[in-house]
Image (tube, rainbow, N blue to C red):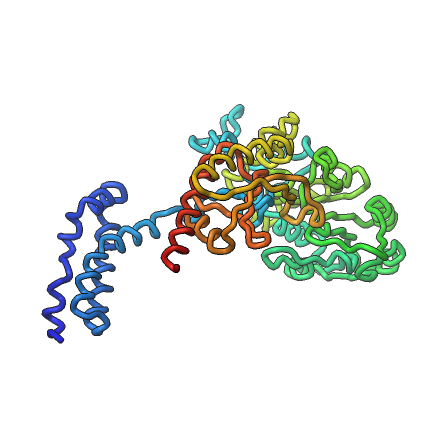
Length: 465
């Protein structure tokens, strides 16, 4: 074997690499420093491999030839978006792993400019950040007062920290929920300094259980939405109205963690009803908190609405500054709330997807399927069931339609490797792509992804054969 020093002679100098047309173009696009750094790191790795004796003489030349591609891949990995856009073909409208509610690009034009975030334009002096959005939230929800924080866990933490620290809050055992991201209600309550008073049993809790739990340390009753599960069969529980009447008779408030952010009757879209925010307030709840990026269809946020005596102090609480939303969330939420208030739900992508008729999905699947089959992809139309997701109506689905393509796990991997990635699901070893969650303007891209991925699948199979 030749000495190590002679084997190093094959490794190109960095300035030679930088003269390659592809890397010159990368330097113009990304700047010289990151391209220089990527070249240095690639050359250093190759020198380490040569020095360790890992590569034979002929393999060194091959590795040198591969440097250009390695550097370009490294640059893509470091400059691609941290959170790339994807095509959601799963049929889950509020897919937690894919960002829950998608937002319309028309919702954020003011973010490209300075905006009156904490400035009173009429008075020409500093204003209050929350004041404009509070009025809009309260009007849309039919509530006397409102506060907005950065998510619903924060909403609950702030509410309890402000009003029940060191005292007991009574909750049914059937509502001690754990949802995605390890949100556990008992742990959030403990973090707020609140003492949990469990009542009833997992499946049956009676009004008398709440009454028996009241003592001098009781601060409130609380109802938690069973967002991602259902208890069925031999079950019972008091209504919000009954709980509110008991709580108020004993001088206590009733807090409701509604979770889903339902402002409308879901039966409008053929789904079982969720209690709306307005109906809970009308039934006597003193405070209702809920998510902004579920059925509200907006950005991640936690909204707290209800009686002024319980809600207004939250914006002045020391914890609020750590939990307050930034300008991006405020601007996006304002746009979403205006769409709800004007009943322009078609402007909100979530509701636009819910409104698509089944026949329209079938026609799209037919068009896409014909083009795919003409390109050699054996796609077929398939009746599917879409789900709201995000912990809402967990045991209910809605009719939908899509495409099925043979290929199993390998095809899903190839689809995820496309730009943009396509996220699908597998049923009976077929890749299923539900069109309810794919906007029509993504149909052509979906076709290109399937043609590319299926071609790659066939090439792999031929190579394996």
